[in-house]
Image (tube, rainbow, N blue to C red; front, side):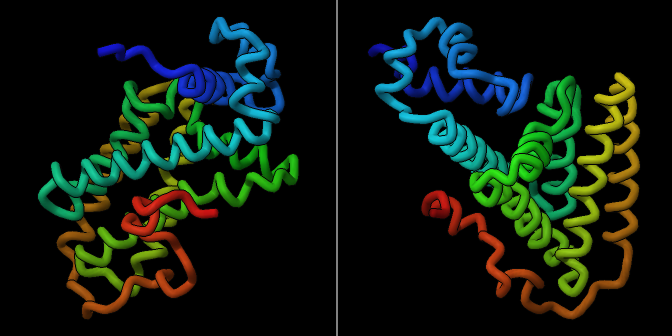
Length: 217
């Protein structure tokens, strides 16, 4: 069986890496073709525009995020363990947060600055994480604070990634993981709140099941 990646997959993978390293605006189609040893004609066979390629990259990231969360739900036995495993996946040295910072955070910031119509699609990864984390916090006994807690955690992760990159100090991420572990321990020991719907679901935050069904239009 031939396991070689299809040309389209190679283009998306190369674009994903270069958008991460140099930004969407700082990466040309020629850069992608050259880095992937691709003919420019092959590129236009699969993607008519750079913006079309950007959507494919975002969809790739969403699929990877769904796969990550699905694995955590299988491998981790408790909500707090799932949350900590998620944090480690984002901040440990072999994660994506170093050396270039969080790629989805950087991409959303750049697209917001450009007022790109692709921004809403790119935000879906953050919203996916926010809702999934909220579900874990609700299962820990904090349904009324679930969205607030999940948003706070994402802010901590993003802040640690930015600082570690900015001053080139990977130990920041390690210390933040340790601090979050202690914070989760405190939440586990806090009195449980009455069970109820996770705040934010009615507002249209995508569920993991909905994302598994396919990318939002």
